[in-house]
Amino acid sequence: MVEAAVKSAKAAFPIWSSKSPLERSQILNKLADLIERDLEAFAQAESKDQGKTITFARTVDIPRAVYNFRFFASSILHHTTECTEMATMGCVHYTSRAPVGVAGLISPWNLPLYLLTWKIAPAIACGNTVVAKPSEMTSVTAWMMCKLLEKAGVPHGVVNIVFGTGTKAGEALVCHPDVPLISFTGSTLTAQRITEKSAPHCKRLSLELGGKNPAIIFDDADLMQCIPTTLRSSFANQGEICLCTSRIFVQRGIYSEFLKRFVAEAKKWKVGNPSDPTVDMGALISKEHLEKVRSYVKKAQAEGARVLCGEGVDSLALPTGNQKGYFMLPTVIAKVKDESCCMQEEIFGPVTCVVAFDTEEEVIERANSVKYGLAATVWSSNVGRVHRVAQRLQAGLVWTNCWLVRDLNLPFGGMKASGIGREGAKDSYEFFTEVKTITIKH
Image 1 (cartoon, rainbow, N blue to C red):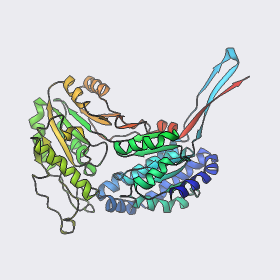
Image 2: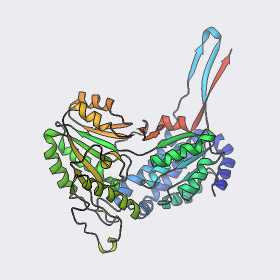
Image 3: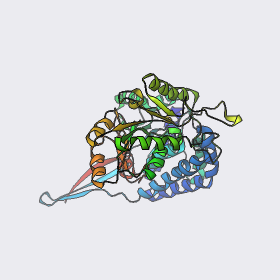
Image 4: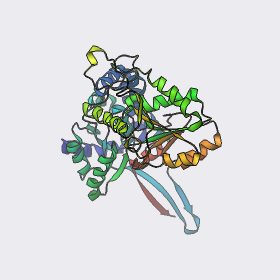
């Protein structure tokens, strides 16, 4: 299957790469229009397949998938190359960029079409052809998109989707000698295997991995904004977003008040049938994942931490048809030590830990004391402080007094075990093209 897909992509590359950026841009825009036309059908499918709420699929996943194509359709028209002159040598130097070839793209199950298109759009905009493998757990919207490719004018073989497991289809793609670059979003453990398997071929890698993201809330924070935003950053999409907040550090002077208000608001979140538009949280991806998330709560309790709401504390009332589903309440844990697995490991579910801190210096050190470095949020009304703290946090993205506000022009990616490389207008363009320096003596 992968062999046939790579062969198809390789055969399509000469024609697709020879098209002008404007021609490719027009096709990307047409594909965006077609997905937008079918937005409701895509949203319904994404919600049923992944477990996320229909509201989240309608307002976040599918609109962002549409925007991914529109954004890269536009940005590919506006890149510039470099040129320098060496008058004393009678030389002019300039750079040119060309597509690399067949791109291997592997996307995760949490934001299926959103993250698949975040890879496909820049890859094909730059003139590459692709073999993409969506997660075997959430591949319905990828299949639906396939049916629109021809209508959009995407030539046969430019976008190839393979359906299968990571150990079979994913590994075959990573190991294929005719796939010179791999873009992967998923777990750090899988990324280690990808790195090992691709090393003999010296492949170009973009790895967007896990996070253990801190929120740092100083005593001058606006809690009216901070609490609802931090609830969202902790529990949106059932906490199944790599950017979700799972460690909340609150300055001691406001710790008790914050905790009381945060827990009270978390208890108001409605968990239930994902197709109910009034629901805040849907189901987790699988039984195995639900058990894994629950196990972290049990470990925290065994270590002496206090579960203030959610798992094992409050009862979950589900509609009759959903009682065997993989649902879990928003869970808040306090009195947890920094070295606890709940403060060190990515849980990837609706669980967040709230701890107190005293000084700026102390909280920076504690926030940085994990192997991950993807994102962080800082809450304070002191402009000098937010700049100072943001500079010192080991995170690829730092939001202050907000969360998940994204400009796709700017780099996206993490430090440390949260990944290698960046994605965004310029970064994706550089990743999906080869640069050449040409010198002309006159």
